[in-house]
Length: 289
Length: 260
Image (cartoon, rainbow over all chains, first blue to last red; front, side, top):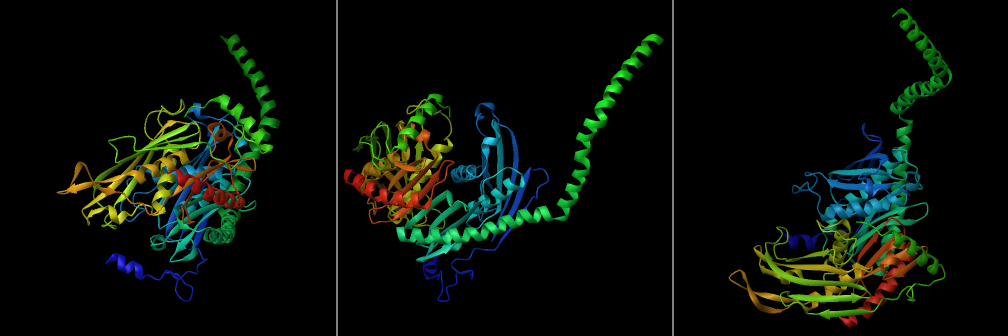
C-alpha cells in the first residue's frame, strides 16, 4: 500500500515545482543568528527548513588529554549530536556510527578553514546540537559551525558553507527534504566548500549517479552555496551591528583599557609607594612593639 | 592511536619524489599494487575472502542471520558492514570499541554496496513483516600498509559473490544447508586516492597516507555509475581532482572485477 503511493508521487511537477512548492534550485528558508549562547566563546543558531541546530565553540584552550596535543597546531574537535526528540522515532541519545562519522567528516571539513597553526597544543571544541531535523542536518550543522567559529573570533581563511544536492525522480534538485530523500531513485550528496577558492572540504554521496548527473549536481551546489554564504556573512554582520553588541562593547571599552592604563601609569608607581609605605608601616609597628 | 614519529620524516621523501611525479615504489600515480584475491577460505562463513594488496591484507566473512525487518520496509532484508582495525594489523591499532577510523571505513564500504543496490534486499525477505535475512559482512585488517578502504571493499565484494544463502525451515536457519548462492545485481568497488601536494595518487601505502592532506574515495559500478563518495582528512580537493578520480576509478575497478 505505502509503496504504491510512493511510486505515484510527483517529485517535480510540470511547472517545475517540487512537493513542497520549491523550485529545483531553491533551498528551504534559512535563518542564521550568530552569538546566541552566553557561555560559549562563539555560537550560532540556524534554522534550515525544519532543521534546527545550535552550535557552540569553546577554546582555543589546552588540549586534553595531554598526549593528544599537537605541538604544531590546534586540534579541532567537532561533535554532531542529535537530540532524542529531533527525529520521528525517539533517537537513542548514545552517539551511533552515523553520528561518529558525521562528526569526523564535518570536523575535517572545518580544519582547512581555520588557522590552527596559531594555537599549538590547544584544542577548539565545536558542538553541534540538532534540535529538530528533516534531511540535510549535517549541512545545517556545518554551515552553522563555521559561523560560530567566526563569531568566536578565531582567525579563518574563509567560511565553510554546505548544502546537500541530489536527485529525485530523475531530476537534479538542491537541498532534499525527507520525502525527496526517500524517493526510489534518490541520490544524496552533501558538499561543503570554501567558496573563495572553490576548495571542496566535504564531499559525500550515496545513490547511483552518472558522471553527467554529478557534474550537473555539483554546479547547482556551487550556485546554492554562494547564496547561503551571503546569509552567513549577514548573520555575522548583524551581530556586530546589533544594539546589544554595541552596548556590550561600550561597556568593555570602558572597563578594559582602564585596567592596563591603571597598571602602567598609576598602579605601578602607587604600588611602589605602597610597598615603601607598607615597609615603613611595618617598621613603625616594630618600633611600637 | 599512537603515531610513529619516524613515519612523518619518511613521509617528506614521498612529497619530494611526487614533485617530480615519482612514487617511492616506482608506481604510476594511477597504478594499483599487486592484487591477490582468495575466495572461500573459511568454512564456517557463508562466504569469505582474503585480499592482499601489496603489503596490505584484509579478510572478510559473510554470515546470514534471521531478524525482523524495519517496520517501514517489511519485505526487505538488509546488510550490516563492519571493519575491525585490530592490533594484528598494526602497532598503532588498539583493542577496545571501534575507533572513529574503523567506523568511517565500514560506513563508506557499506554505502558503496548498499547504494549501488548490488544486493537485492527483497530477495532476503523470508516472511513479509516477520523474518528477513540480515547479511553481516565482517572484515578484519590483518596487515596495514595503507588503503584499507579499497582492500576492504574488494574483500567484502569477493565474500559476497561467494556467499550461500542458508535454508530456512520452521522459521529457523538449518545449519549447513543452503538454498543457493546470493545473486548480486552489481559489483561496486571502491577506489581511494590520496592528495599529496597537487597530485592525486591511487592506492596509497601507509607511508603515502602519512604524507596525504586529503583522501577521496569513489565507488563505481560496471554499468558506469558512481554509488558513493567520501572525502576525508583535513585537506581540500578541487572539482578537477574529483573528475580525474572518477575517470581513474572506472578504469581501475574494471580491471579488478576481472580478478573476482
